Image (cartoon, rainbow, N blue to C red):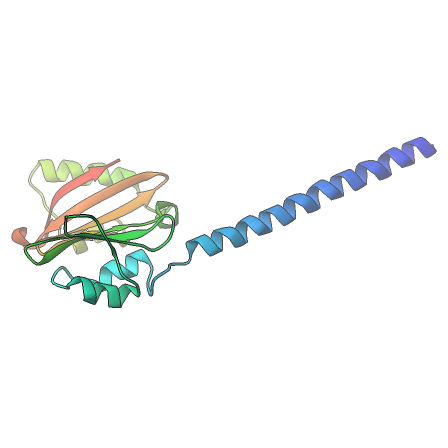
Length: 184
Protein backbone atom coordinates (compact mmCIF):
# COMPACT_ATOMS: atom_id res chain seq x y z
CA UNK A 1 0.00 0.00 0.00
CA UNK A 2 2.86 2.38 0.88
CA UNK A 3 4.54 1.64 -2.45
CA UNK A 4 1.33 2.47 -4.30
CA UNK A 5 0.90 5.78 -2.43
CA UNK A 6 4.54 6.67 -3.04
CA UNK A 7 4.14 5.92 -6.78
CA UNK A 8 1.00 8.07 -6.99
CA UNK A 9 2.68 10.88 -5.05
CA UNK A 10 5.83 10.84 -7.23
CA UNK A 11 3.69 10.64 -10.38
CA UNK A 12 1.70 13.68 -9.22
CA UNK A 13 4.89 15.65 -8.59
CA UNK A 14 6.20 14.68 -12.04
CA UNK A 15 2.98 15.82 -13.74
CA UNK A 16 2.96 19.05 -11.71
CA UNK A 17 6.61 19.72 -12.61
CA UNK A 18 6.04 19.16 -16.31
CA UNK A 19 2.89 21.32 -16.32
CA UNK A 20 4.56 24.17 -14.43
CA UNK A 21 7.63 24.04 -16.66
CA UNK A 22 5.54 24.21 -19.83
CA UNK A 23 3.47 27.10 -18.49
CA UNK A 24 6.54 29.21 -17.75
CA UNK A 25 8.00 28.49 -21.16
CA UNK A 26 4.75 29.48 -22.89
CA UNK A 27 4.57 32.73 -20.91
CA UNK A 28 8.15 33.51 -21.93
CA UNK A 29 7.33 32.75 -25.57
CA UNK A 30 4.32 35.09 -25.43
CA UNK A 31 6.43 37.91 -23.95
CA UNK A 32 9.13 37.29 -26.59
CA UNK A 33 6.55 37.48 -29.41
CA UNK A 34 5.14 40.74 -28.03
CA UNK A 35 8.63 42.27 -27.92
CA UNK A 36 9.38 41.21 -31.52
CA UNK A 37 6.06 42.50 -32.85
CA UNK A 38 6.48 46.09 -31.61
CA UNK A 39 7.41 48.41 -34.46
CA UNK A 40 10.67 50.34 -34.24
CA UNK A 41 8.90 53.26 -35.89
CA UNK A 42 6.01 55.57 -35.11
CA UNK A 43 3.58 53.28 -36.93
CA UNK A 44 2.97 49.67 -37.91
CA UNK A 45 3.48 48.73 -41.60
CA UNK A 46 -0.19 48.98 -42.57
CA UNK A 47 -0.63 52.32 -40.85
CA UNK A 48 2.62 53.64 -42.36
CA UNK A 49 1.66 52.82 -45.95
CA UNK A 50 -1.66 54.59 -45.46
CA UNK A 51 0.17 57.73 -44.24
CA UNK A 52 2.85 57.81 -46.95
CA UNK A 53 2.14 59.22 -50.41
CA UNK A 54 4.11 58.57 -53.63
CA UNK A 55 4.96 62.29 -53.99
CA UNK A 56 6.67 62.42 -50.55
CA UNK A 57 10.46 62.62 -50.43
CA UNK A 58 12.67 60.47 -48.19
CA UNK A 59 12.91 63.11 -45.45
CA UNK A 60 9.11 63.33 -45.20
CA UNK A 61 8.84 59.54 -44.98
CA UNK A 62 11.60 59.42 -42.34
CA UNK A 63 9.59 61.89 -40.27
CA UNK A 64 6.39 59.82 -40.55
CA UNK A 65 8.08 56.50 -39.75
CA UNK A 66 10.36 57.96 -37.09
CA UNK A 67 13.78 56.83 -38.28
CA UNK A 68 15.90 56.98 -41.44
CA UNK A 69 15.40 54.44 -44.16
CA UNK A 70 18.33 52.35 -45.29
CA UNK A 71 19.35 53.18 -48.85
CA UNK A 72 20.44 50.49 -51.28
CA UNK A 73 23.68 51.30 -53.05
CA UNK A 74 23.42 53.24 -56.31
CA UNK A 75 19.63 53.00 -56.66
CA UNK A 76 16.89 55.13 -55.19
CA UNK A 77 15.39 52.40 -53.01
CA UNK A 78 14.93 52.82 -49.26
CA UNK A 79 13.90 50.26 -46.64
CA UNK A 80 12.45 50.86 -43.18
CA UNK A 81 12.63 47.57 -41.26
CA UNK A 82 9.88 47.98 -38.65
CA UNK A 83 9.95 44.49 -37.09
CA UNK A 84 11.43 41.12 -37.98
CA UNK A 85 8.40 40.43 -40.21
CA UNK A 86 7.35 43.89 -41.39
CA UNK A 87 8.89 46.68 -43.43
CA UNK A 88 8.23 49.54 -45.82
CA UNK A 89 10.17 49.78 -49.10
CA UNK A 90 10.04 52.75 -51.44
CA UNK A 91 11.62 52.79 -54.87
CA UNK A 92 11.88 56.29 -56.32
CA UNK A 93 11.77 56.98 -60.04
CA UNK A 94 11.38 60.45 -61.54
CA UNK A 95 10.64 61.88 -58.09
CA UNK A 96 7.72 59.54 -57.35
CA UNK A 97 7.76 56.57 -55.02
CA UNK A 98 6.44 53.07 -55.50
CA UNK A 99 5.60 52.07 -51.93
CA UNK A 100 5.37 48.48 -50.70
CA UNK A 101 4.51 47.22 -47.23
CA UNK A 102 5.53 43.78 -46.07
CA UNK A 103 3.15 42.70 -43.31
CA UNK A 104 2.85 39.71 -41.02
CA UNK A 105 0.28 37.60 -42.88
CA UNK A 106 -0.47 35.53 -39.79
CA UNK A 107 -1.89 38.67 -38.17
CA UNK A 108 -3.91 39.51 -41.31
CA UNK A 109 -5.56 36.09 -41.53
CA UNK A 110 -9.36 36.39 -41.63
CA UNK A 111 -11.35 33.20 -41.03
CA UNK A 112 -14.52 34.85 -42.37
CA UNK A 113 -12.93 35.51 -45.78
CA UNK A 114 -14.24 33.12 -48.45
CA UNK A 115 -11.69 31.95 -51.02
CA UNK A 116 -14.51 30.75 -53.31
CA UNK A 117 -15.44 34.39 -53.96
CA UNK A 118 -11.90 34.98 -55.26
CA UNK A 119 -12.53 32.42 -58.00
CA UNK A 120 -15.81 34.17 -58.85
CA UNK A 121 -13.97 37.50 -59.17
CA UNK A 122 -11.26 35.95 -61.36
CA UNK A 123 -13.95 34.55 -63.67
CA UNK A 124 -15.81 37.87 -63.72
CA UNK A 125 -12.62 39.68 -64.80
CA UNK A 126 -12.05 37.14 -67.60
CA UNK A 127 -15.60 37.82 -68.78
CA UNK A 128 -15.18 41.61 -68.75
CA UNK A 129 -16.79 42.50 -65.41
CA UNK A 130 -14.63 44.83 -63.32
CA UNK A 131 -14.81 46.05 -59.74
CA UNK A 132 -13.80 49.13 -57.80
CA UNK A 133 -12.26 48.51 -54.39
CA UNK A 134 -15.57 49.34 -52.71
CA UNK A 135 -17.48 46.92 -54.97
CA UNK A 136 -14.96 44.18 -54.23
CA UNK A 137 -15.25 44.75 -50.47
CA UNK A 138 -19.02 44.48 -50.88
CA UNK A 139 -18.60 41.20 -52.82
CA UNK A 140 -16.49 39.91 -49.90
CA UNK A 141 -19.31 40.69 -47.48
CA UNK A 142 -17.77 43.90 -46.16
CA UNK A 143 -14.31 42.47 -45.46
CA UNK A 144 -11.74 45.20 -46.07
CA UNK A 145 -8.46 44.45 -47.81
CA UNK A 146 -5.03 45.48 -46.53
CA UNK A 147 -3.19 48.09 -48.60
CA UNK A 148 0.01 46.37 -49.68
CA UNK A 149 1.42 48.74 -52.29
CA UNK A 150 0.70 52.01 -53.99
CA UNK A 151 2.13 54.19 -56.68
CA UNK A 152 1.04 57.38 -58.35
CA UNK A 153 -1.23 55.33 -60.65
CA UNK A 154 -2.50 52.31 -58.68
CA UNK A 155 -3.10 50.59 -55.35
CA UNK A 156 -2.85 46.90 -54.51
CA UNK A 157 -4.82 45.33 -51.66
CA UNK A 158 -4.58 41.85 -50.19
CA UNK A 159 -6.87 39.54 -48.26
CA UNK A 160 -5.44 36.55 -46.35
CA UNK A 161 -6.97 33.27 -45.22
CA UNK A 162 -5.17 30.14 -44.03
CA UNK A 163 -1.90 30.91 -45.84
CA UNK A 164 -3.59 31.90 -49.10
CA UNK A 165 -3.32 35.48 -50.30
CA UNK A 166 -5.70 37.15 -52.74
CA UNK A 167 -4.34 40.35 -54.29
CA UNK A 168 -6.20 42.90 -56.39
CA UNK A 169 -4.70 45.93 -58.14
CA UNK A 170 -6.89 48.96 -58.78
CA UNK A 171 -5.73 51.33 -61.50
CA UNK A 172 -6.34 55.08 -61.69
CA UNK A 173 -6.23 54.87 -65.49
CA UNK A 174 -9.25 52.53 -65.31
CA UNK A 175 -11.17 54.92 -63.04
CA UNK A 176 -10.26 52.92 -59.94
CA UNK A 177 -11.36 49.58 -61.39
CA UNK A 178 -9.51 46.33 -60.73
CA UNK A 179 -7.03 45.46 -63.45
CA UNK A 180 -5.15 42.45 -62.01
CA UNK A 181 -5.94 39.76 -59.42
CA UNK A 182 -3.99 36.79 -58.14
CA UNK A 183 -4.53 34.02 -55.63
CA UNK A 184 -1.57 32.18 -54.10
